[in-house]
Length: 87
Image (cartoon, rainbow, N blue to C red; front, side, top):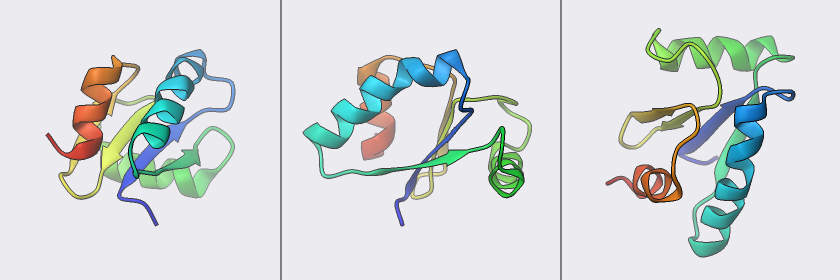
């Protein structure tokens, strides 16, 4: 299981804009992001609420289990990569 989590909604346009960045990150590094759909999966939505703690309140929501840092919404590739590698 990956230490990097993405919580997304199937129909979420902001989540779709992050897909190429996720693909690029996984190709450029050995990192893998576990993707968890929350709009149609209540167990994933519950986990999102536990990790989000009311900070973001939406998707996409990225959580790094090692650093306990998160990203709310879409972001740039540089910020995304820094989050993923723990900087």
